[in-house]
Length: 77
Image (cartoon, rainbow, N blue to C red; front, side, top):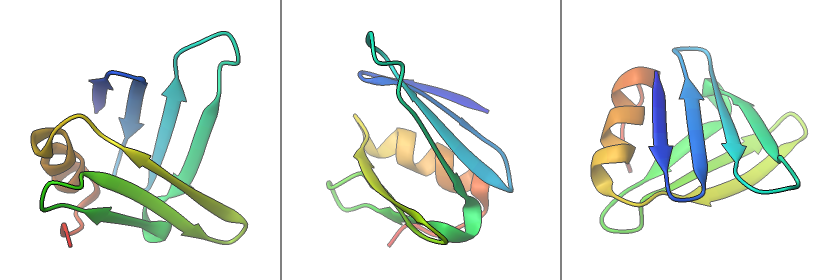
């Protein structure tokens, strides 16, 4: 599944999340689905912590977060 948001795109499946940020730097963030937490209630943030991974990213809307939660099979906190 691919989600396009204002800063780039998120490519996700049941096992992992890859974030590709737009811009000249071509930043890519990757995390296992087990290391991902989804924060809702207007915050709309993905956090990834574990096994050498530590990053967070804010999405544009709660709908994007819900779509990601469905794909990963994890609950929004």
